[in-house]
Length: 264
Length: 274
Image (cartoon, rainbow over the protein chains, first blue to last red):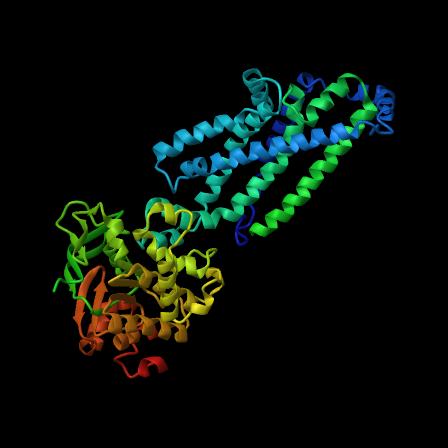
């Protein structure tokens, strides 16, 4: 619903062929310009293919001897995601409303939106490194990192949902003499609830994935175990951990699909 | 007896200097049921929205709107206590304006929000007596059995009656109905108008209803106010509403045949003849 479809009766406009040619040339120029910087070496990919095959070979068979510690690491990762997302949802509800142009005046929406931009534009991995310095190594730093970053994302998504609501039910509530906050609770929130729930669950899924990465900087969970094992060149164990991450994330995705259905 | 509604020198101009309302004086006494008729864009809806403070008159001037003895707006400034005044004014919208995802009962209970403290309304803890009142209101409009359904699952006529029940829970002494039957089929229209008429006759609620159908206005209301370009061009009993007046009210827009049946030879719909 955030995307607007082209109206069917309006024919698609085709750019004149010269302009099209120029824009394709511009795209090609950007890729050519990035070639050197990104250190693209396709020939070496072919040259070292033997190495890559050997490396891939080292991953098999996966070594599940330490599976208990991997599974508990994965659970820890899920727990970090649960708290990081939960705290973010609690904060994103009021902040999202304050970002919505049809709820708050511009002198509130503008500063709140800029603050949320900051939270969103800095990657959770960066936040995790900062929080590790602040609160020490461990899952709590991961929770804080996910919390800040996810608040920025959810507040923006929540605000967009609020700005797309139908104003007439809100006016219906207003006409009864209800207070402003009651207009929001009775007129706005019921309308955006399915979208908000859907966004929150989606962020929870991606936070489980992110949480398995932020362990790399010492913020706990399966990522931390993964990092230690890769550095020890234990590729068979690495493979086992990767399988556990894939299975864990898939399970979470399937579960949240089910929960999402209940909200619509 | 204080008038239920007093309008003085109401002027409203939209952007581009388009004058949409220009009413020198209009008074409605308690217990009256008044129809407002007029072509599309004649200012019917805008007038009703001004009465509950949902719209603001032009700044300056001497405009003043008093409902239930309390000033809703004056000189283009909405009263500070407008929310308390609105509690006494039920508003029924053309598109019902219910919250579709909430149960009918909750929509009706919204009428009680203004008199309950926030610690009750925010978590939705409505006291027993208000719930009882909401059920009574739903029974009164004949849809009590639908109270647990989502409002969006109701037909248009049922939604409109739920909206009237919300006004009843408000304890409104005045009901403003903005084209309440414009989106309804004839049978639902008749039931909604009958419900409004019953509330007017049995409970003494003042009803101000804007209507597109002149015949419906003539059947249900003893007083008709006609607007043209935001001005009152007729104010009187249905019997005084002649073809001449109607052609003045609707002007060049008259040709649309459903607008002129009442006083011409065109037969009235069944419900209007009853």
